[in-house]
Image 1 (cartoon, rainbow, N blue to C red):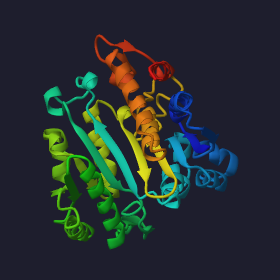
Image 2: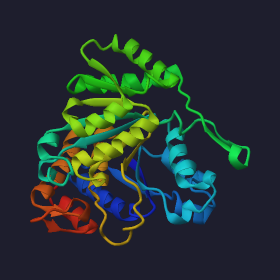
Image 3: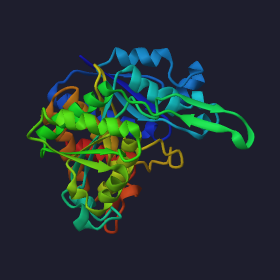
Image 4: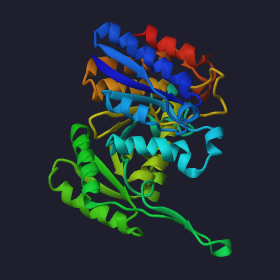
Length: 354
């Protein structure tokens, strides 16, 4: 039995997660994987029941599972709470830290049927296949935070801290990934300004000696942001620190046409976590408008990295390509001449093609 902790979360998470679970159930019937789904609460529903967005019950469920499938967190109701109780700070970041998930993988693929859904020219993005490896448990998001003083002299302080060990482990992860792909690694930093980036670059050059077949390039984060839209075919694997990775992957999502197409996997501990790269989108929640494909593709990553079942993962990915080739589109990727469908219809279409 392979237990998956299912955390739908907030907003559209409650709509897209059932579609991904349905796909996994269809795959389970085909391959006999013995999947078991157990549901837990996080963010708004957890706070309503337990008074905290990440209760111990949810932590225990995740630890007792082999993988976690997460929808999204964030809602207007939770935004009204003190900062220390908001779901991003009190639930999402802690669960990553608790599970030891230091490496976040985000795959950016330009699907041929969606080349015209991107705001970039088709010839610029055609054929791109980028893996972004983002360090997930260090940096500004986890450093000391404080506010001090009052009036015009009030200050807010966020501390950016990385240890050599934290930098080395994510770089080794990225080098190993590049070794299995096209053997080209771009390490993104801001070494001309930040001391943490200077250490990052030094460690990158040291680790590179152990991977002589991987071509290492250094790039400042601002230049990387420009090149992602100017010449994205430059990239194979990108590795970077936490905040830079957060920003760059949202930008890179538009290469695939929509943030609704970008899956992610958070790895490093015994229990991995899989989630779409987008947020909870409360403005369209409950309207059957959300694109479930990023969550379904995240389920494919679960099959690949946690169950090590490549055939099952490819089945899911092929089904997604099939529905796109047939012209089915949710509102975020809608184009002239295509067939508009809702969240549930898109999920059903993918399941039919498995």
